[in-house]
Image (tube, rainbow, N blue to C red; front, top):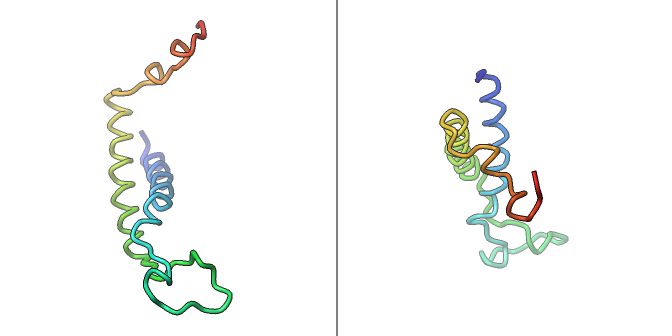
Length: 92
């Protein structure tokens, strides 16, 4: 597999991972007891930590990308394994 393809797959996993880890550990201003700015949304984070999100996303995407590439070469799960047509009664 070309290196550029691995980088592209890693970046896709990174974006997915960033959105997955973003809500963990975030508290609103009300939960932290901090005063809100007038017009601020009730759900706005009061303790947004970008560095923690970047680190968590990087670690998770590295694990997911490694598993994906290992599966690609080892063949643990193939397209035939994902075929659900026999399960729902469709004929091939």
